[in-house]
Image 1 (spheres, rainbow, N blue to C red):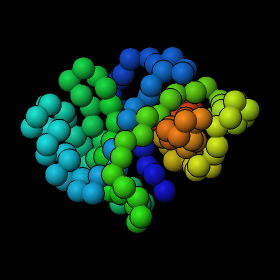
Image 2: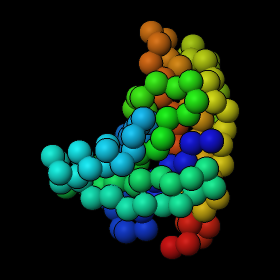
Image 3: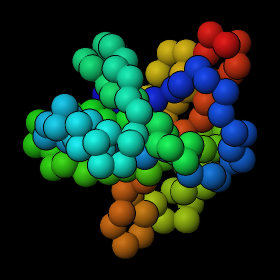
Image 4: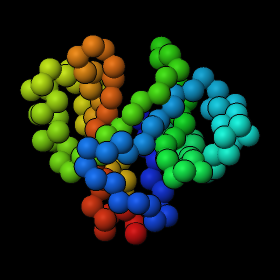
Length: 138
């Protein structure tokens, strides 16, 4: 299961269809954190999740994302998440336009839900829907 970042700080309102965040799958999350922190000044915080440690980050320009360990058989990679208002409608739309579902809906309690899909031409992307405000602990 992939766990996604959710900072409790105020953040700019992102419109649906905006790039929400990037997730990096790393063979050595600690080394990835160290590199990005030292070279680009990214700020990290460790979040303990049921699947293990997740490194949530924020860039100096306000970008956000996370670093997680690669899963067995997975190559290091990055994945872009697109914010949507209605995850089920987004799934129907991406499939209607030729995408293939790669990872079905995953609910992350108190944070939101997502699915992964492969678009024509091969890239894998994801859609993310934030949890309702009251369930995020804000």
